[in-house]
Amino acid sequence: MYCQSCGSQLPEGANNCPNCGAPVNGGNAPVQNNQNNQTTTNMGPRPVIQKRELVLTIILSIVTCGIYAIYWFIVMTDDSNLLADKEKTASGGLSFVYSLLTCGLYTLFWYFKMGKKLEEAGKRYGVAISDNSILYLILGVIGFGIVSYALIQNDLNKFAAQ
Image (spheres, rainbow, N blue to C red):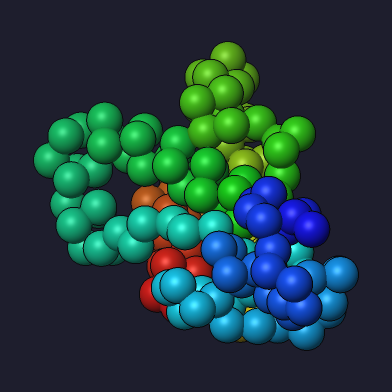
């Protein structure tokens, strides 16, 4: 038998994959991954994302006149796509291009979708995340996009911390 999540060969009678910790035979109960103590669900192990320091990212965004904010936008989009398992959603780079082509209108849609994706990922992995999509959108509309970025990163850091 082979693991449906990672393809590793399973020992006879195993309840969980020794490589990734995924339950064998489609079990629904969360289990602990023995290798790195990651919580897993029937969806497989939670993806690993990088924790970013909020103050540092804001300072770098200001000091670099927004260049770091572009990078930050891209990695937050990619991290949220990874957590929400959204393969058909635009990547971070493509989202940035859409934002440029629409003169920032796509960014307003992006704020809203980030709130929805983070809430979905929170439910998926058992992390307490509220649906802040309207808050992110309002902050972006009134010109406080950097605050939305910080709130989004704070929610992403909840996944990285566990």
